[in-house]
Image (cartoon, rainbow, N blue to C red; front, side):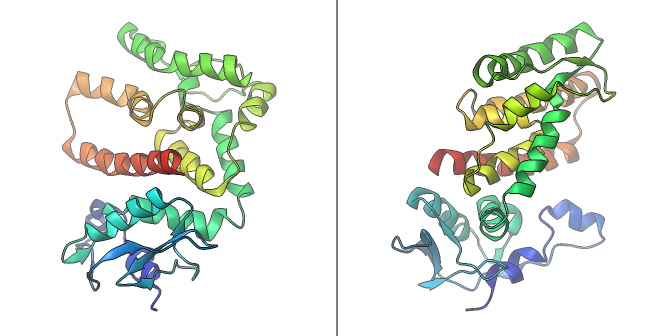
Length: 257
């Protein structure tokens, strides 16, 4: 079967607004299948099937999930496509693609990137003024720092301003030990880390300390405060909504894995 994900996903901008910035409308492939469904369990997991035929990733591996519920969610993305296949509406498919092609065979580089985020984590950098922003940051972020200290044994410093300051190596090491090594969970944590700018928020979700909605809100404290002062940017909100679907996809992996 043709390499569907290479044709449909690999060469398409994930964000339609990015396509607009490049000077054109996204070129979407016409839907060519009738139904997506999930195959029976096999060594590769629960495979996605399009009209009974298996789907391959860009690296020509079987697109399959380790849990049936997760595979059904991926199939749901394909069934939700209408006349054209829009990759921006298929975050679980894209995340599965990354996990299968990259993390299954080489997880360590991704773990190392998450560790780097721990060294300069968003929730450690605090405003000096105004008082209303300081309070919002404390309400959203202090419970996560307290969880990291009490549960992981990782005491991170709070830093006023945005100038980089090194965190205690012992704190980074303790939190690093909580990064999952199983490829699907690692992929979800890595995705959340990049989306929120905080490995600590991602780890708190992965370990059940907070839910994904709480983490998403916490990641946008500064942005929301700014919008409260200066008004909303509709384009920025649209981009944020697209990123939130990525966050939910990662949460689904953690929940259904």
